[in-house]
Length: 361
Image (cartoon, rainbow, N blue to C red; front, side, top):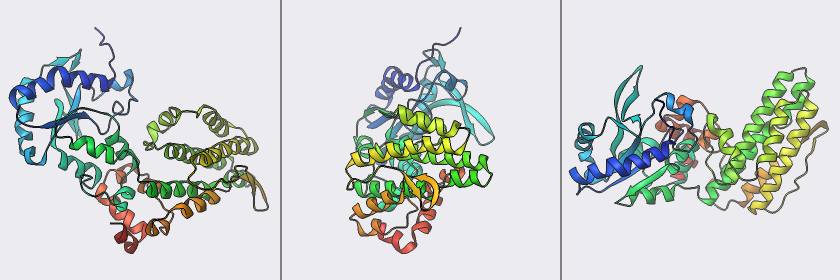
């Protein structure tokens, strides 16, 4: 019999309420904890569907213990292994967990100290001061994973406070990240026409697609949403309010058969996003019309104007004078690299210079 599909967050919420919390109350009633579904997984962001259930799928969540109770994690995990039911709402409770080149079958109620998880997942502990370097060295995907999902219970209150602290960048960091995203666009906005004129239409299409991706990420940043990684970028963008026409322009630009048509659709997209920038009110209003790229016959928005205005709006002297490389995933997008938080902190320091990095700590 086919199992009725249940969205992952709903499944986790019901599993926590009906099974996990009663077991914890019975066996570890004096141990304070938080229960949540956070981290990687399409269901955390609400992007899951029936297709998601074909691997590594079933009721799962995390139990976060305080630092003083973290030593109880092993005992709680063992209790759950012996007491959890075999299935819940038609889904197996024990299912494969990837392990290196293979997998092992076990339940997916992870029990861990909150401090351990924070440091491992983010590279820093946001229960203490979150520095400007911390913000720049953590990929937006990881911030999205930790601030989306759902907290089902939070006895100590620490998890809720941390999620609130990480909900969005501090204003000055946000302005810097926006400036760097416009900088990326300004570096390539004239290239679709130049590639095509040089006989490289495929190159023109590829650069157009890169620019569309950067505009989508910019829109998410403007609306204070952490951009997810590539698989879900389009989904997250499409869920932003008011982006239907912009999405149509970007789709038409990538699908166009010649560079002039590409340029026309991208110009519409640029002018739309420029108007949204003005609506933010973070800089004085800027001209939203496209213009010629110097004396060449290419239409561009002149993205460097937005970069300069945003940089001028930053009052923090260290952030204002940083190189325009941006946050870590504005200049690194290798999946393996983005999975190593220690490596990312080193890369961020190298990109902005050790002297400036030291000032941001």
